[in-house]
Image (cartoon, rainbow, N blue to C red; front, side, top):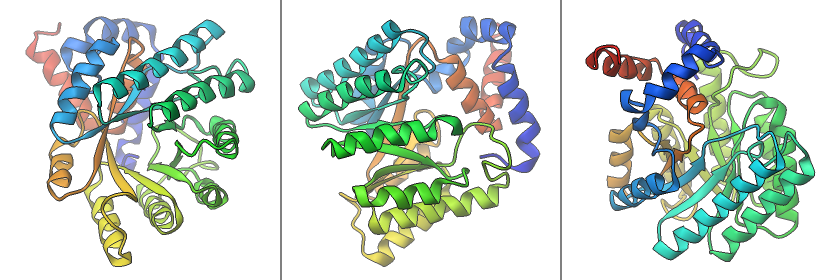
Length: 314
């Protein structure tokens, strides 16, 4: 979530994401202008090379294949197979990595039944590989369907599945309360989409306070909490709360950050003995992901513009 003064810039960046000319330019030049800072590459081979290096540096990995809103069953099936193949590769190479997927990538817009079937296949492969998976959260219109799939898998006995809640949504506290009895494995994020006032908090202060509320509630009664933020103040607040409640560093929670963002902070947390997982995305559908990263943090825009100028305007 950005400050009030950054909202016009954020809206402008997200609007540019739908501009065909911007899309063409960034798709051609983006990787060499700096997008590779945030995206591992376009292939599984690119991703695995980064995952090995990240593991070597002391970080766990959450793999995400970039894509959402799949338009046909073949595309949803391909994504399902690729996630399943990744999980098998993690087991063979003994990589400290799991997967995080968007249910629209696995066919939600086509059919909730299709998405459930495909997500279940990935969950089963993860279980067979002694691994975990997480359902990422998208725009607010997908929350009910995503959490419904999570509930179904949990009632079917899949204890290795987690979900995500966004602290900028008004509903997230009640969603967490409803899911705690299932032994929830939840990742708490702030939220990366533009949502109306009636659905989401608009002030950074409100989003941050709700974030801390969600984290603390989950730490007390949740099975596992992934604290996903680059906000140092919120991280220190979570650490202080865990220490006060006697919650151990291992087994109950971890910190998560985006690949290419806040690396010094992530390294300091590892040095302090905390588990840190980096979300490492890859795939040829990286343009929307990059635009959301730019919208979240204006400094990322400056990074790309600096590279553009250094290369003489591409």
